[in-house]
View (cartoon, rainbow, N blue to C red):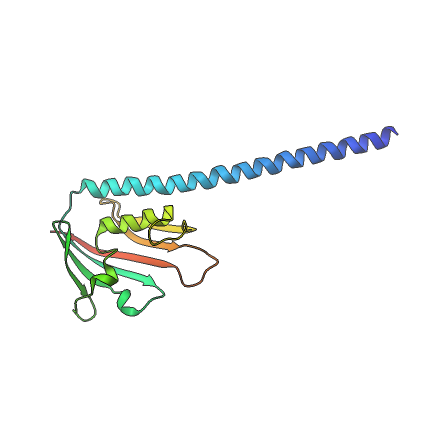
Length: 170
């Protein structure tokens, strides 16, 4: 009887330890995933403040969109911003004017910051928080150089990306 009691106690002890280890692992995953989100948001905030500190209201840049969409929605396009307003939106390939309905939501650097924030928060054009948001920022000016957003890894062809090049102060 002593042997069976000892065996039962070891099984109970082992089950309790396993249960607490599982709870601990679960808690660690929650803490790490929430800190990654806050880390990304603080990186967004830090770079947006850096961009705003440049006080640029007039600049030119080239934007290319990566998506499963028609070619005229991808660009690349040269964008001219004067006093905070887009004054020119022209395809690099042929010099023709691009219509605002194709790039109007991303035709300034401030709007690109909005897209990143919306992807994190699941707002506006995003029905849910994106599972993946990868952004690289210009080290001195803070604006996004590359953006990759995947709303759901279980969906095909909803990913989108943006590349900003040739930003020049005016």
